Image (cartoon, rainbow, N blue to C red; front, top):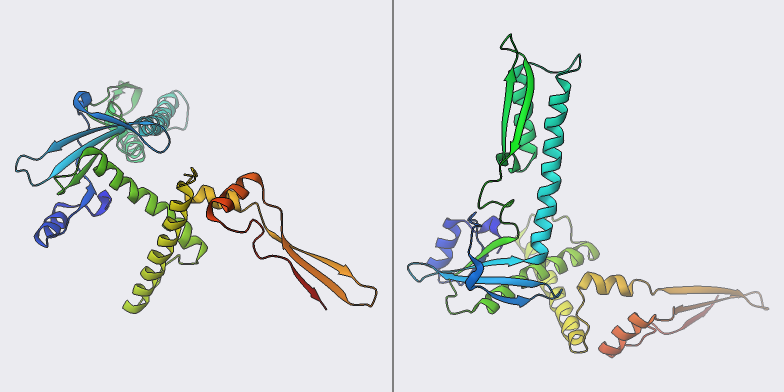
Length: 296
């Protein structure tokens, strides 16, 4: 499960009922020493560092993870948000020298507070001062300094923690199992869009059960297809496979006959090399549907 449902109460209930679980931890600890971590490569060829830490009572284990891709992603997100936050502060500061702009100290602090709300927590990394003028009610300057908080997303990007009561699993098994969640969510997003299963407005239990059954059944078919493709060295995401095959379509050509009737010929376009490789791996016809002729 992801961190949205990994509350202490939910985990306690799972343990009481005898369930095994693997969740994304809700803890905010990021300052982790990865010197003792092992390293493996993910599907994209990027290095992932894994550090396994058992709990004091031996009932749980935590796996701290850090990947190159996630480091770059969080650095980019933090950079954009901090640039936006500083641009907002700069706008307030430059406005003090113009007529018709907010200069009252209490109003400025309100606007600074709104900037912090929009910064997604990155406002904590700034020390801000509003310098009062001679009147004491109006500001004459705004000064700020970036002071990154240790152990945060800014200083320790790319770190996340998995939590499980499967204490016998090694680092690789635990991480690979978690990655299945990401893959499953991506496939479900694709399937639900194609099958028209979004949005969900079920008011009866049997309809909800039917929805789940169709979704899980479709996912099993997807995994079967991907398993067959992986055996032939084709390991792309489901969305990538769909985009590759989407270039092939069926077309209908219409011809007027000498006897006044019309001939319709429907067939698939010729498969491109990447498409043909997928069909060959699956043992499928590269011209699905065959050729259909209809005279009207």
